[in-house]
Length: 420
Image 1 (cartoon, rainbow, N blue to C red):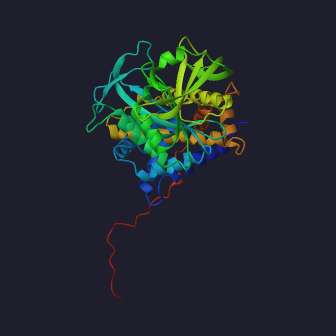
Image 2 (image 1 turned 180 degrees about the vertical axis):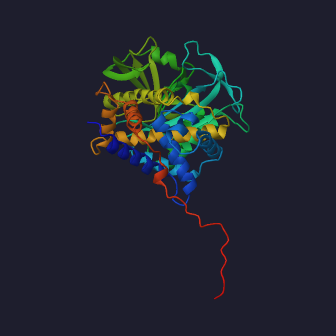
Image 3 (image 1 turned 90 degrees about the vertical axis):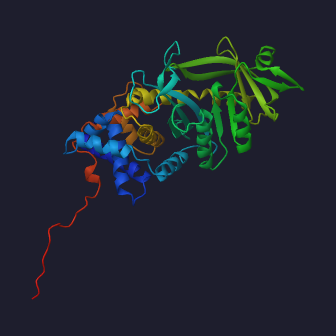
């Protein structure tokens, strides 16, 4: 049964303790701001400052709360916050984790006042129209038990911003940041947009595993000659039969596929890699290249399934936009946009931690129950957990102000002392 007082307290305590743990204790002002924003995002299910401010239930005018949040968003968040968050998320990953890398777009077709608003391809439209907006580079890891995507790097950028170099510069900066925080070797998964020589050379240098989907233009070195990738693909047939389960356009699909593989070399450095060909997912067979060791058909199947797990980063993008309305943010400067994006990332990271606690804590089950979820057999828990927090905190009459110590200033009036 829904016990509002107990449930609200447990949910609020989990949110506040998580938020406070991200900020060094000596920085009380920033700790309060981060906690209030994460709590406000989760309670309101929105990235609009007015909604966040209203969810804080402060005794002052809502305009003043919005102004305070806006001013804090314009200041760069401390680097320690991201470092503390990353360490928390890395601790949820498996010993040799799967890391998914992808880009998404934030469309602002009617925007006029946003800083450095560029042009991006709208991935949600069938025509793939070019619209005003920003690009978001995201690197997420899959948690050890529930395989939930937790973001390790997220950055909003535009080709027209000042001192901008390239999307590759953002990508490699993100990869370096993530790799520096990983204690062991990981497997990085990339889609076709990352099929480039610079990435292969980078990953070989970093000595991490990778799986990249190839484009039709790629040339491969096989048996002493260079071949166009489609020529090798069309000259072979899949010999390994297996079943794949994945999501496409938000729907779960199951397909029987046939897989083949051969040893090749790629790029001018000619580092040895494997080409994996997957037949049965569409009219055009899928081509993957990897540096992971293949000793038998089990390895080939596992590599293919690992690549197909990239649907989770696409589901992550969809959740971020649908539940929190990320494309609807109103802050205008790139600093504020990226700070808001980071705080939203932390809020979603808390959902990942809650999902991993299933089996060890009652709170995630309580939240899913409060969400009145219709389905129980889900693989992606974020919608249910977020709806559960939304429903639970709707009963909260006060914000988080009482969870911080009030500064008691001494009286300011002049005190006179008379000699006795």
